[in-house]
Length: 474
Image (tube, rainbow, N blue to C red):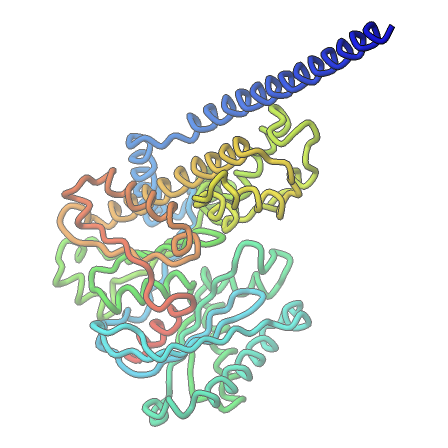
């Protein structure tokens, strides 16, 4: 009897072990099938995102021709919003002294002070002060209250820094003023936002706003005056020109994408001497700042390259993989369906993760989407999705830059310095490397020497300071 019981128990144990082994094999098989399906989606996505040189040149050529068409026609159906402004002379690098600037960002503004020592020296004595705009002022359509608030804060800032600003007391100082509304700020329903944005299109509105700012400055006893209101990308272009006569383009790569460049008349474009003279006198030197219209193909173009959208593209791909390949398990993570929950700094962190088993990716998935059971293979796929999205975005930016340089007619015979500002370029190392390699690939070793890409001088908000320096001529 006992021997029979023992045999029965052994058989039961063996059967249970076999069942467990089968279950493990099934789980491994299902997981392998999931990853195979996810990989198929990944390969298909990579093919659609490919940016061979021929496609990049198509983008560059279209960019150049679209700018030309917009400049030479009043046709409102063009794909670019190109805002041309005949500004005061850009800085020459000879301006020296202490300058102030304000960069209005929608929900806050940045007051900047810096000392310029000439084109051979970097900015020094840089001070920045960020001020949040009270909600009751931000909601008011009249800009007088906002100008009054900014002037009051500037007066306090100047008073605090007065001991180091003695060289500027003997003259009325110019104040640089730039706008850098992010896409998620200054909604269209805001009358104030509409008015400020109109200043970039309508010179009359811009002069009215400058007048309101100057009245507020006088009211608060601040001996500064605003000459013009411009987009912050134009300010970064002024910063590039301060250090190099060959600086002709500025790009702002942040939540959105803006480009500003110097447009010379055809009479002076082929003459370096006349071009320089024209730029200094401000007669035929126009600064064009353009955006990509939402309704156009270029509106889609901006969504492929801007910081606000890179994370959203990655999220949508991961959602498809979770739905069709169960990349993160049988249950769909609810937060993965929330639009714009993944931001570009998160994409950069996951993409640049060099830790074992992609630990940073795992931490981000848990932090943002509450995904706690991601496997190393799933995390590797997430990193590869980030790479595909970033590479395509960076290479399209490079193609856009080449297109603008082509439009200026400087590619073959003159150097062009491209100033780039924005966290996407500054903090996303792989994105930055892809951008540089794209320009080199398109132009080759010979022509690429004529296109010099550098990070903006002075950092965030400093464009307003260089703009102030350019106003000293007036």
